[in-house]
Length: 404
Picture 1 (tube, rainbow, N blue to C red):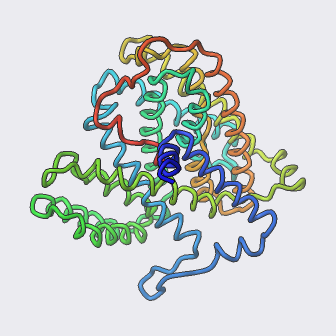
Picture 2: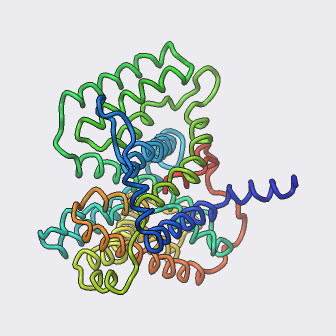
Picture 3: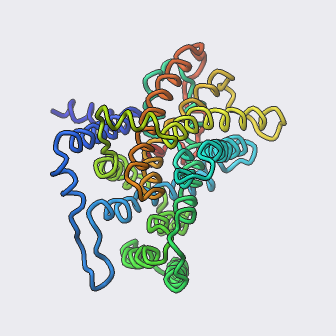
């Protein structure tokens, strides 16, 4: 029995586990909608909460607006860890992933807008902007023996910045009219948290304040999950009462985000009807082809082109064990835009047909990107020499796949 628990713990800590958990939840959601449509739809549309205090949402919105705040809180913690003592701390090492992430967000959005040409589908420009590290790292795990550790390091750094950009897009690109009074209340709550940091070292008093900031942002018109990133960036990076709060929070919350929050999000949002009529409609849909091209072509050009320009100009440098073919494989894996892409699709469209077609485009792009990336990385030469991680910073030991 102890041996089985040890094997389970090792597997849960592997790069493949988050992808498997997300894949199982995705299959369950697809099965629920296609084989038990009424029960699936009724369950997620059930309303819960307290209308008299402005906090009554259906179950799907509780997941998207509240539970997913934990997901974005982890993203914010990871970004702060990377900037303060991780992969993004050294400017020359940070330039490549930062520029690659920006290119990997801007180029797909531009391709999408060019293909939709101002139609109703154009509001989904944010769908292809983010990469899904859970699936991307899963692809790397399949070919781990042929992939040097520098590729994983670079992918994680790009994904961290990439998802941080996606948070800004979600918060402000899809804001529903700003209520400045509520936004001011959220800002006041944040200032109070900053003021408390000098005197209050216990984490418990911050929980009700964090909930109050979330509530204010929920009513401000900015997407409620933005509260997660804001609160994460307010978390002290140094030692508090002899311990690193940032590392402790990542250690506790990363598995929760990975194995609870992201799968629950998939169960609530991934469901798409996969029948001949739906697939035929998607094949004739501009939004489906726009998503597909943006994730496959736009992501590849944005990431690979940005890396090439940055390194050729001398402004940045790749890890010493990363070569051209590795960059190509990494750029292809960036087309895996699953979780955040689906999240944005739900925000971007009120027309259920457009949402469904966008989701099918995300599914198709993710499958093609996974196969292409795995094939490319599998053809790379086996690395020689020491297989130890190229980074010895504290952040490098933190599991970064918690933001899917």
